[in-house]
Length: 115
Length: 115
Length: 115
Length: 115
Image 1 (cartoon, rainbow over the protein chains, first blue to last red):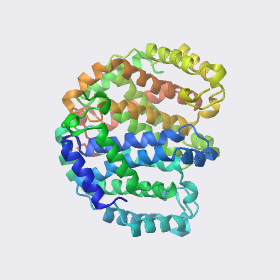
Image 2 (image 1 turned 60 degrees about the vertical axis):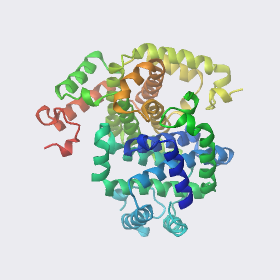
Image 3 (image 1 turned 30 degrees about the horizontal axis):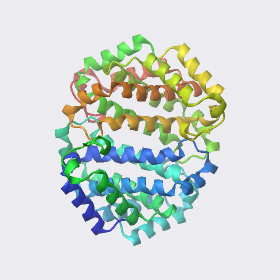
Image 4 (image 1 turned 135 degrees about the vertical axis):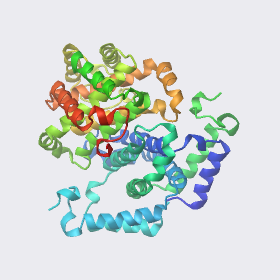
């Protein structure tokens, strides 16, 4: 999603400020949840039909919130030594089995409620 | 964070299941918040000193939760046409101004409380 | 919302298990957020029109999640010495000024966007 | 937690503004999660030892956030016809079985990991 160079810049930004001490599984996961909550605020009271216009009108601000999440996620992935490419690839394979096309097509049901 | 090819695979996975209809700013941002909450559950009751061990012992499960967040974020970035590399780069620059090294070093204070 | 006797029972339940040590502003507020996320999961992918049926079909399970939030909130209110009756009454008065009927009627806009 | 009269006042506040149309299981549960996130922000980067002081210094602001959660919860309980006193009482009984004193005392483990 973002380049290796940009991740390096994020790490440098953090190291310069001596902020590694504030980052761990708890603070980063909580912070991702808090930033996601700010993102969810845009559509807090919206009806379905209003969502596309909200996304369009607030594109710049939404992009900044999404950037915040990506930054926090990058730190977490780095600090925990997660191979994100591998983890996502495995998850997709896993989901492909839980949600076979013939059963899941057009359905928002959870895998344990598909028939 | 993840390769262009893997994002394409995510999009293909979604298209095959006709799931675009369920994805929008609200459902994706809410879902990111819900997945982040599951991630935060690992340290829900933990004391500071217990966090590194929790992160290590649950590495595989944590990687899967992080993958879920990355997948949802990838869909959101794609659907809203966000240039994530640019958005993150701009946010880092913005934060560098709000948090100058000489003031922010070693401090977890918010920018408006730095002196 | 719940009686003084029931709050006492909650406090007794906690004291018997020596769980006060795990409760503080961080763990309780995070836990409320996590429980609210579980509640929000019921409507994660729902269209507007589907929500009443979801609320009806899952009434028992939803009641249990709502109970969890009320329990955590009760602990927080107790531990921080918050006068909830007073705090809510003040908030309503405050909101009545921010959202005067003639401007706010039928609108989901934030107070700073009302005209 | 709050009196019947105050709940009535909340309902009147809402009816005057014609805001029932914006309240349902999704918007209220999401809003509770968003308010809880704001509450969790107070301790976002805090070390264990710093939490009591944060709770004390921000008592007024925290009380307002807690009030917001209680207000949203009151609407949800009302709208879904939940008997909160009963739901909480049942949950305590249920938890008493899942967390018997002799096993759970002094432990933050989940019931399925108690031995």
